[in-house]
Image (cartoon, rainbow, N blue to C red):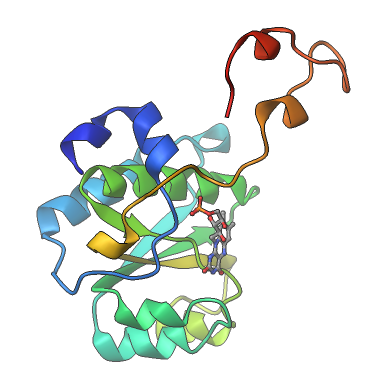
Length: 182
Ligand SMILES: Cc1cc2nc3c(=O)[nH]c(=O)nc-3n(C[C@H](O)[C@H](O)[C@H](O)COP(=O)(O)O)c2cc1C
């Protein structure tokens, strides 16, 4: 998968949430590239409010997986990256970093998904300071994508004509009627 996904458009088209992982460890060289993709992300006023905690410890992963209702599969990933924002004005700054990390991981055949709703206790498990202004945005599982999870078919998305407007809300963009849009 990795070579063909150098193309950013293709990667965006193919990427999907991955919740099952191969047990193979992720080489540090690739982990480094994923984290670099986060570090290089844009942020408001270049504030770079993020911290990334690498978690490989099985006990810790399992503990964290029980601290959200929507990510029990976290326990099965070879590693996770917790994304913490310090004094962030905008959570969107974290989202940009997460998207960049996701796309670079995808290039290497590694899948992930954003998991939300972690209880505050998860910050303790991760040793995040309880004083100051630290927000745990997500703990993202990362692992090589098994054959069964590889993308097949089209994404479930609204068609462009439902969400794109021309000049004003509700006005259609004529170009869309000339192409065979998905
Ligand atoms: C901000 C955000 C929060 C999400 N939270 C969860 C979550 O807690 N658990 C989960 O399994 N998936 C979560 N997802 C994954 C979405 O359900 C998934 O991206 C969406 O259904 C579209 O599917 P796709 O990523 O395969 O294209 C989250 C995605 C985003 C962007």
